[in-house]
Length: 306
Ligand code: RIB
Image 1 (cartoon, helix red, strand yellow):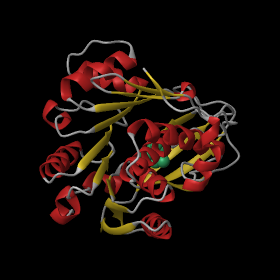
Image 2 (image 1 turned 90 degrees about the vertical axis):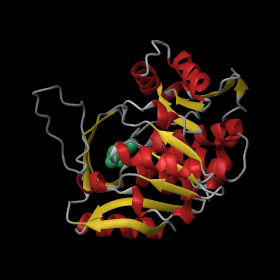
Image 3 (image 1 turned 90 degrees about the horizontal axis):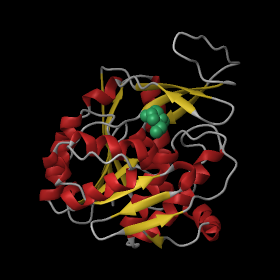
Image 4 (image 1 turned 30 degrees about the vertical axis):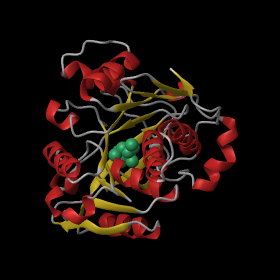
């Protein structure tokens, strides 16, 4: 099973011709409320990919919280480890331009009260893949990684948004998922001065004995290990909104690993899912189901060795 520890946000999505520059006001016709938050998106992505998923995190006792909890439940996700408290549910205004590029502000709210100690030990056995991102207190992530590793669970840390990760925590990570910018930033914070993302990923993989998954946007993705790795192309789609594409990728990668697929095949399925997620407005709107990925898999050739 997959245990996602992370954020749940209500996204306020606004579409406009161009994104505002600092100090600029841009008028757009309206906005829509969409379920979001990196943890939430990844949990839903993994559930739609066919995995058994439990979510741990925190929501406010408010309308946004009720709505997000109900939607997760509707996806078949176990929400019993989501706390409800006084802090308001996390909220993310998202601006999207005509090319599908976005600008996101996350107001953490209840996510900043997420507490890994509420996760019972029995959820962290060898049959569990624990998936984490960086929109909850980082110290909680490091503590959960240590517990999970000690209990024999597998771990996947998506360092998004980018932040420094302590060496001890990296020692508890099996799969590190980053985009190109995050790869370089995580490495740099550890004194690895590689400017090229895949070189930075390779250095991290070697030093911390982990597999580093690097999403490369319109150029696909790579899985970098100490011994080498794999590269896949993206699926060609008409991009409407890239919000949540990384989450679709991570959730599908995790689900495929959890199902016992080889990492390079997980990479291929994740690449298809990440592309499909860009075809509608909203982080979860176009998250594919396993059958949707199956149907498009031929559009992405098998991963090739790096
Ligand atoms: O990765 C996309 C997500 O980032 C959005 O859903 C938003 O809530 C922010 O967490």
